[in-house]
Picture 1 (cartoon, one colour):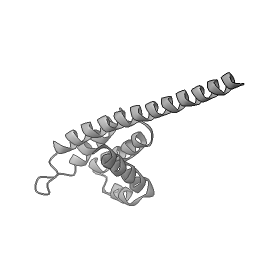
Picture 2: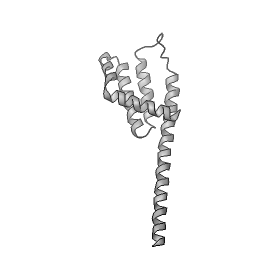
Picture 3: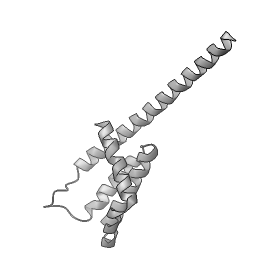
Amino acid sequence: MRIFRLMIATALACSLLLGVMGSAGAASSNCASMKSLQTKLDSIDTSGKNFKASQFSDVGSAFQKAAKTAKGKLKTALNNLGNIYNTIGGGNLSSLQDLSTTKYTNSLKTFISASVACA
């Protein structure tokens, strides 16, 4: 009976360790995605003076590229943001209303949370 309890305790400890390692791997991947996104966004001139509507497409592409290496909710959020920015950059000004949707605000919250966690 004692050996059985020891085996159960060992199995639980191993599964906990693997769960923590898996989460750390996803967080590490997400932080790498966020860092590459930040580098890309820094290279886009978004100052009001030289900003063009087509630059929304550049921003959207940067989000979608970062989404390829992200995991979980962050991947979905980055894809959502990228799609919205690409649509606006395509010249469809009615797409500006997408900036007030729940999908956009939830994606933006996830993006900001990941930014803070990886800072």
